[in-house]
Length: 176
Image (cartoon, rainbow, N blue to C red; front, side):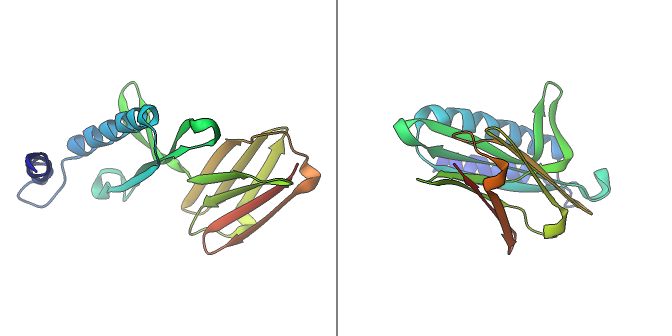
């Protein structure tokens, strides 16, 4: 309980009297979130966390989005998958123009199914490329840009690839 009060106190300290946000504190929080993701990978289980940072005047309305999903896959192995447009660099977290969407990969009997969350784009702006067992998805739809490289659980042929996009969810099916 004391931790929650301290977290609230620290969060309140990051907002000054004028209501603006101390971005240094938020970047520290993102760094801690990335470290937490690594610890969760070691501990196991499944969890999703995400957040948004509005930079307002700092970068002409640029928004930073970061999240991660921890999943347990076959064999009890855990996978931590980050998403968003905030990347950890030696100089600290940096906000990019391109978001990495969250993705789920399902290895079915006859096909591999991939689902990506990419709201606010047009289906015609989605580019999908498959080379062996690497699936690349890129989207440039005005102010929404996404990019994701996914290592598939096995090799697949381009001829067996189909996709559909509805309500912000891209579904890709690849025949084995």
